[in-house]
Image 1 (cartoon, helix red, strand yellow):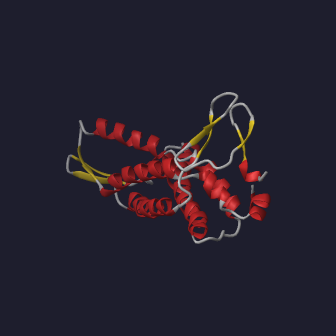
Image 2 (cartoon, rainbow, N blue to C red):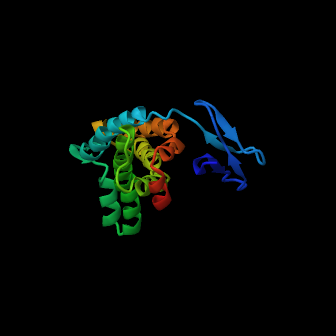
Image 3 (cartoon, helix red, strand yellow):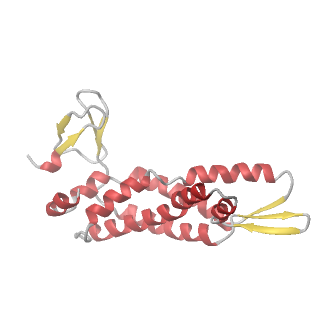
Length: 207
């Protein structure tokens, strides 16, 4: 029995042995019925392509303006970092740091971490400390709050649109594209397959 064939149900802690699970099929817990494994393609080339597509969107979202506000002849551009700066200037520095980490720093590190792990594995080898990085990537994923930030932007656009002229910048389109790409990648990436392709000695030390 190989250790890679053992799967623990995260709902009831029932241990299962899975073997020869075909791509496109899933396995459920025999005790509580929860899903314990959904096998997707072991080929991670599509995941790598999506990450490579997300990185330019991330850069555009951070460099170019989200919106341009024109009120009584006064024009001001708002960048992704503007919200962080305004919160800090208002004395809400803990909240500004939280916004910075969850909308700028962690999403960028998440994309770089995925590339660091997936590209070498696709060529048949593992990067140094790939297990540590991939475990960290999985933890960081839950802290990506781009959707919440986008909701805040849309609310602001709705309110400001009644008192000023607004021009949507390229960063907002890139921001929406980034969220969509990450969502697609999250649904297609088989994390179990990534772990399965790592050398056994790396799993022993990194997991």
